[in-house]
Length: 80
Image (cartoon, rainbow, N blue to C red; front, side, top):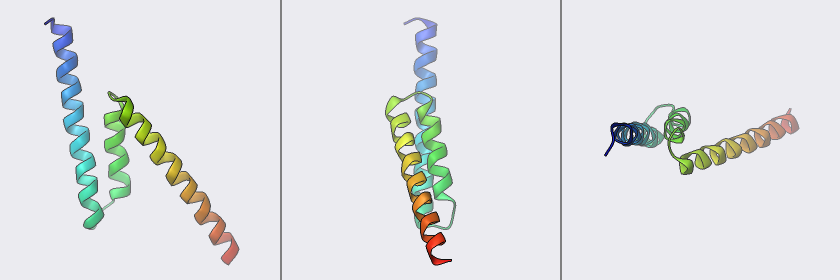
């Protein structure tokens, strides 16, 4: 195993562990007072630097929150 491959594997593992930890902390924050809606995307962004599945999940999360935001704006405009 060459040093470059070993470095990439260690970097990938570290990214996975840090990103997963941040996402899990965000999940815990759903049930405790805290900014889960901010922490989970940060964890996904960390994971997306190395993993395609995380990049796709982050994109879906952004699209969903964007559509929810637009829906909320429409409701607010109708009520006021």
